[in-house]
Image (tube, rainbow, N blue to C red; front, side, top):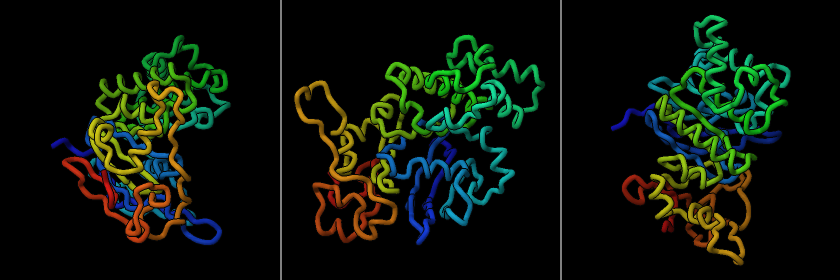
Amino acid sequence: MEEKLLTVKNLSVQFRNERKWMKAVSDVSYSIARGETVGLVGESGCGKSVSSMAVMGLLPGKDTCRVQGNIQFDGMDLLDANKETMRKLRGNRISMVFQEPMTCFNPVVQIGKQIAEAIRLHKKMSHSEIDERVVELLNMVGIPDPSGVAKRYPFELSGGMRQRAMIAMAMCCDPELLIADEPTTALDVTIQAQILDLIRDMQEKTHTATIMITHDLGVIADICERVIVMYAGQIVEEAEKFELFDHPAHPYTNALLRSIPSISDKGKKLFSIPGSVPTPGSIVQGCVFAPRCHKATERCLQECPELVMASSGHNCRCWNME
């Protein structure tokens, strides 16, 4: 058995609006082994980013957000960890590539200085060693003229170069766990492929476990080993990559796969899932996918199914699984 680096058990996250508490993530449980790449997939609003922010300890305070459950990282309970402990972990042993690098970098500080700050916080290195490390990192992520780019500001770089710089910052301390939140969103296809190749190469070199958050199943097929499908804050299916693609058990997963455009379907109308993701807390009974599911029965509308084993290593939450 591979050693588990991250174990999430019964994670629930609630946010408070003006009137009541709304559950955005409900009883999510999964684990990731060292060096493993796991894809977290689903439509926008399914709870993917919120669950990862809970792991990073970046959710708001208790007045507006409640987090329940258990998150174990290398034997350490992250939900009970104090701010100082989390500060030592973030950017060091656990790193995150955020979805939009333009809003994550400080616009008035040079790229090199921002990467250097992350190194300085966690490593005992001299100024010259840090400067060399910054240039090494920028070169490692494929940025031309790394010493020159280190002196530039974020707005002077293209979207692809900012994303590469963000990956360089995330990998500066050789983290054991990397969370990549839609790292290829809004990038052209060529740059997407380069970013995925970069993450794969760096993972092979450092044996970093990776959570790849995306709604793009093509990205999942390219880089991940195991897939977790989320819908309305719940895990609805979990399986090895090829098992999930070849034998999707949940109607939602099947619908996602049918939504992928195919060259062979030229002239045919593109398939789309009817309706939209429900707002948190709007469905109080039954299966959360039932209002959009073509296989829904009366039982689906009344009873919420549990996540059960459909086959070896393949879990599904459905009364009428394929």
